[in-house]
Image 1 (cartoon, rainbow, N blue to C red):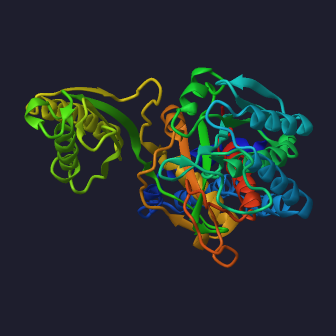
Image 2 (image 1 turned 180 degrees about the horizontal axis):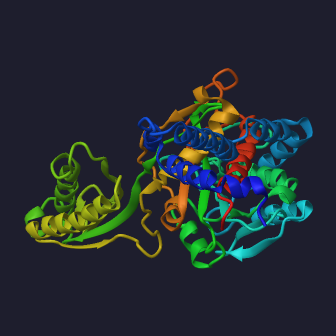
Length: 480
């Protein structure tokens, strides 16, 4: 039975709750609270009471969903504690010394599992060959499932004339694997997520819901995210968050944007075949070099003449191989490259037109052409589209933790990311995290460079940011 007060004022509380619900959905409905003069003093007092209760309830509701400055400070302070930060630096350096390429991350996966075992965090393995999906289950009741993601694979480092070189940074923990390097910062990504695992596991009794930690293989070209999703371990996730290091941003700064953020990307390789022969008698040959040159020039017009100038697109030929002798016209020429668009539809259009142009130019020059978009081996990546609400959530968390001035709007970027596959399945947000420090670095080098370095003071920030995004998501979304 309701107390007498609640019975007496139920007629007031119910309209107030309706108003709160309206206002929480649409701030413009505050105008509904501006009421015309009432016919009686009693009615006027009744409406005033409704207004006051609505304001109080709305205030408490907004306070309940706003990020907690104390939580962000607590997580960041814990991650920056000397022993915690030293542990993360050690992890990152161990991973950095032993880089592994796509779907070969056996040693890295073993390290991840060992650290999760030490923390008492359960996990599924193997996922997509070498991947690990860990689970931090909240002890305070049911709730949604939010995922955090880190990629594990390294890069083959090409430095000079296509020759694979060792990492060119001379430091104590440089790569010990010839031709392989964590030149894209995935060693830092893994370390940050392990740091988040430690922070979250120590607070799991207060969580309502589930947090999944995705240690993903094969981001660099081989669509590891697609294969992780195929295995079903993330079927219950409602949102996912990821970080990527960015040396152009200073320590303590993060950046992203709502909507399309990173481009859709794909590759092509093509062979134009003719008839080889002596270069002194070109009339007796069918020259595939001329056909290839014509095709390459025509492909440049896809962006300059067929793409809206206000839409981003790229077609880049990056590989060209013909004959081996100065005086011999080769029988065939092989060409390769990449094409990108800020929309999936734009990528499909470029794919169609690349095929049409190459085949037409081959025909005009009496050659034949075969083209392969490598869709099985190197699956095209969709556009990475940040969900607007998930982006706003992560942005708000970052502002409370790092300060509004340190949360930037990033430009759209023509780099491809297989995080896009996750963002197609659930509300996703990808953020850049600054790892540059001009005061300690001789020069800031971009990712994918054999000279890439990062400031390890970013590791605690990434760990705390991951953890705060997940915890506050569960706080804001109490219902599964």
